[in-house]
Length: 364
Ligand code: FNR
Image 1 (cartoon, rainbow, N blue to C red):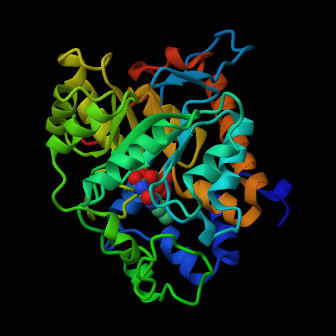
Image 2 (image 1 turned 90 degrees about the vertical axis):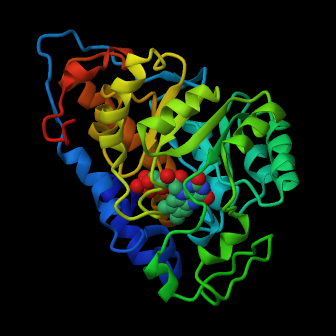
Image 3 (image 1 turned 120 degrees about the vertical axis):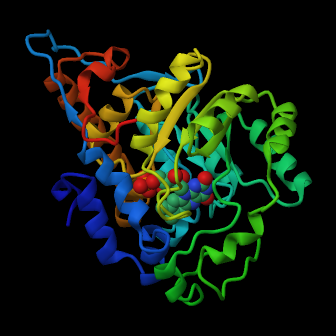
């Protein structure tokens, strides 16, 4: 279908499933074990309803906001996903160009299939990107990666992923042999014979702890963010360690099955942070299962500063390259603008818990 016939994010997923090589589809779409968390991530959004305001002047809607102190055109960002070239030869570079055009922040994976140089070189003058760090067992490699990221003008933050001390059990992915299904040239020569995610395990360290966060924090002036927080105690600990932000995330349901849905976590954790007056000190991002403008709004109402999108970007890029990602971003922006109007709010900072009915979530 032509891009004009794509009406929403789900359409991109359906098209990607048709056109992607089997191995790439398996790698992108899979979740851990029985994929309960993968589904729950999205379903949690179905349990929250709006409390719209009427007769508000909504002629002007402003979607712009700030994340880690940087202005951006909308309250969502592109989360880090490995191996974009499995889906399209332009890979992460296509994503970077679309993000630049739309003034959306892109988080670049340690395991990107294009080099950091390639992905940052196409950035526009004031484009913002983030670097996602998998802390290598060889810490010097990790520190070098941080220094290299910091040397790029566009990079405005380091996101350390902490929910992958071991790779989740993605069976769809394991069933397809990585080899022969793609011509992606992995720089690290990871073992291509096993499933794609297995191949990346050399970047994963079982011994990562809070001490490493402190050390990395000392090595850079960039904001440090922990990606993969899943309970209030750890959110508080992150604040104690002085990180600039956290991401409530279960890695898109790809790690521990039965990990809680990020939206549920947000509603559980924000009150704890507010009570300790930490909500203004540490930004809270959330990702997983976000597919609609309404999903983004619900997370913002519950206190998120920004919302990450993973698979939708891979799917739109795989099917249509840069134009697809641009369209996916525009669709979400259009939905957001209309939904804000219908909700009776004109700017992001107006959103708050009073706009949502969370009784369908699990209460405390
Ligand atoms: C990911 N994710 C991820 N996260 C990370 O920190 N580093 C990485 O390299 C990757 N790689 C990756 C590959 C693929 C194929 C997927 C689907 C996801 C997780 C990602 O950043 C994000 O947490 C989830 O994708 C969000 O869920 P949705 O939007 O995909 O439902």
